[in-house]
Length: 100
Image 1 (cartoon, one colour):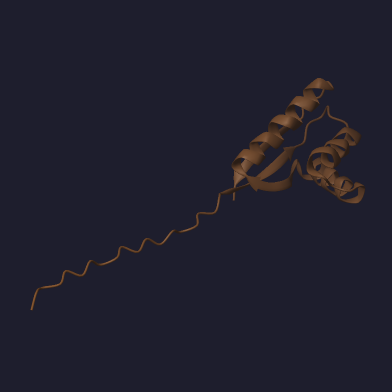
Image 2: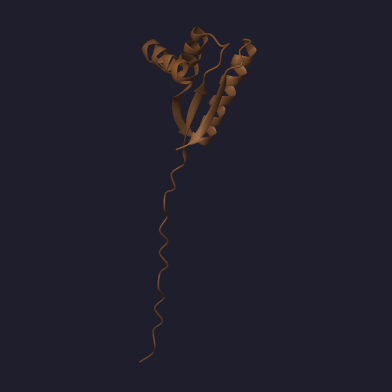
């Protein structure tokens, strides 16, 4: 009887890698108006007026607050957009991101 070579199938399991997420954190300063911060939260972070006011007060009272949680590229874009818009309007508003 001839010898039969049975090849083993290599089964590759693809693991789905989820992206790392980052907190976008807005920092308080002594120059940016509260109204402008609310405007930014509504414009760039899609918050309603109540949530935007609440986050603005947290930034004002504690020095910083999380404005959103995003993958790296989105968080980076949000920070660039906010910084650019603030600069165009004469404000030194700063945002940072921290990996969760």
